[in-house]
Image 1: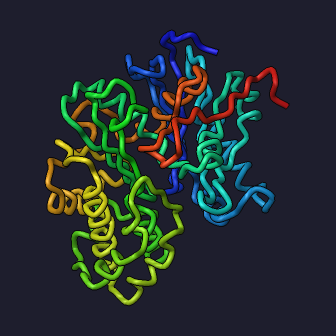
Image 2: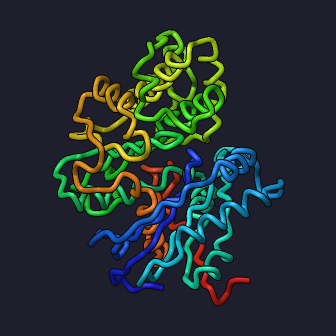
Image 3: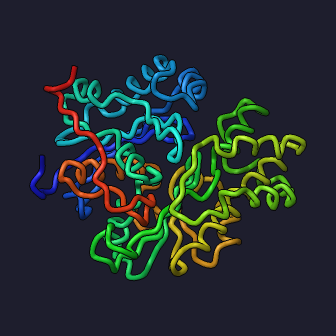
Length: 367
């Protein structure tokens, strides 16, 4: 589709936190970042969030009709009206992820979205990687590598995304390309916002712990943290990935704690999981840049700073937008797919070789 020119691409991301759809424009040729465009956030309503939460864990062939309607409507509203955009990257909503079992399921219809927007849409980013033996996640690392070069980093840096699940990318910007051996290592670290949000919803009817206020008022139950870190996932070598519900028993581990202590303990679980994960990096990063909703939780940021052997800062400190980095990533990846460039590699998903995933739908071919 493309011949290496720089274009304005629009990406969308709806993560496992189920908060809403982020949409953002990146100017790129699929290798370099030339600039950032406008962005938009379309929150899910409480009813929509309930529909999506009820569909978590479902696979193609199971009843996902109501959830699909929510996903399509929200994405059409989020993505409509951006000017001078040539291509859209559509991640969809992850309902289930079992790379060593049934595969991966990102709910969404790229054909329908292409027709509704009147623009070519790249979607189904993960299936090809999983089919070839990869974890299918995380996929943002190729964009993180471009960000490290864009910001002029001269030593390895790490990007930590704290959504429903945490994932980290260690990137060495001295390498020529993201698929080059030693350029990237990426993997899911463990639970992040999802269990905290679930506890807040179940106990207080709130979507999240605003400002980390409840966690900051609580005491950590260290025995729960130590027990949690015995989980087999933490003994696996990366790359590795998680589903939102892989630690679904975690809320039960804090059920007997007061609300504030439960929140503080879940924050410690998140930060301790990250610290355990960074032990796998080829060398310590010079800086850990935090993106996603978790960077707005002072309790999480304080514990990361206390536990990690490097500077910890929100990505805004280097001029990036932590609210939109994931959406930008799928804009960037869409251009790579259109150019036939790899979107994952052994260091990011454990796949045997570099893989160019994704499906391109054009509006004139949509049903």
